[in-house]
Image (tube, rainbow, N blue to C red):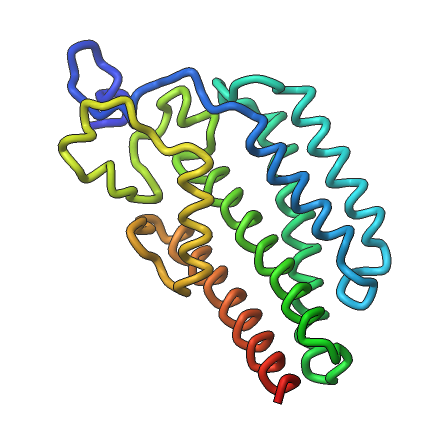
Length: 229
């Protein structure tokens, strides 16, 4: 059976595989705004010297996405996808740089306050959760636009509803919040929970997120406990 066979009239297939109206853009804009604010609030010792310009670039890219597609993401468009991936790349690079700076500050003992340490570490961890949720959202079945058009029937992530026969006839399909949940649980448990990665890129990406989260959380907690004692 080919991907086109799933869209033939009379062919039974679950609703999550069917074409639909697409997701709203505003939840993505909201979480991107949170990331920009968190990156702006980080001290200079935990960010790049050009952090203000990086945040400005992120804002411009997010605004361009909102202007290009303010409503539902109903089609797979090359232009908006390039904008979205560019925004993700900038946010990821900025957060990785902050994570590296945090590790260096933990090693040299620059941060003396456990409250500041937990706050800054929590900010980087939360940004990590949001950024990886957007990577999952952007690449699962070729992205939100492709999912709306039903282009690719083969999922990269297996959500519990997909393997539950009771949901095969219900109007359920993964939305951004499902990917945010996946990212949060992966960053908290350091491994997949109820959402399973199927493709190799999904497995490697979740592995990278778990590694970053484990290093960040482990070092921050260990250093905070050391300071308190």
